[in-house]
Amino acid sequence: MMGVAIVNLKTYPGGFGSRGVELAKELESAAAGHDVTVALAVQAVDVRLFSEAVSLPVFAQHIDSATAGGNTGAVLPEALAEAGASGTLINHSERRLALAEIEAAVRRARECGLHTVVCSNNEATSAAAAIAGPDYVAMEPPELIGGNVSVTNASPDVISRTVALVRRTAPAVGVLCGAGVKSRADVARAIELGAEGILVASGIVLAADPAAAMADMLSGFER
Ligand code: G3P
Image (cartoon, rainbow, N blue to C red; front, top):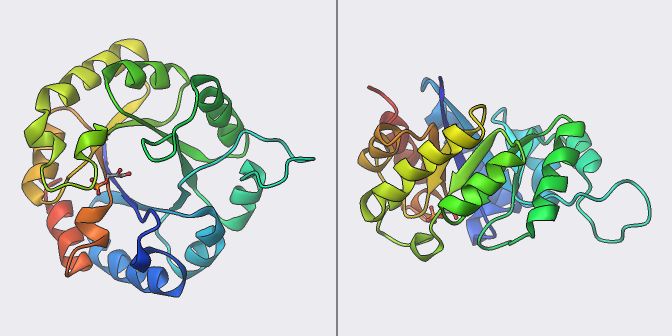
């Protein structure tokens, strides 16, 4: 299976609007020639801007399960799809949702043809998220998010146990891992542990040379 690398631009200063688009173009060039699906997770307000500027799949960072109608302020799945989104993250340690909302958001995203990645913070929530039937569960221990120690070094067992649990619970759902992922070695270890890929933010967005950081990480998918 082809590897997956999703870059979450969060609300970092260089990750939205016109500066974010420049970054996205650099990452698009860095991703060329690698046999890895690279997607960018952007703020909902930026989905159209990014999807018109680059050919990489653009994900929203959040979606609501609202239906078209009287829902002021909701991020509507249909509107994201029309704006050019390929998919969406759902739930995150920085944007927590209740289980019922996660399930509803996965269903609504799928109705609108959007790929889904549910982020989770431990093995139990990964298994629960997998039952909702997303394309991927992305396991990220919250205490390691944004830090310099990769989950693949700090908690390799959590990744392998999550992979085993998700395979048993919902074999069609893939596992990504994230939190502190910074290098080729971190990515290679994630793959060894059974993950299909990574969800990464600061290691790329805050890097002195984001394109070089991206190229280094993508080389970790090569056997
Ligand atoms: O969504 C990805 C994220 O939470 C991981 O962040 O900065 O540890 O790569 P980071």
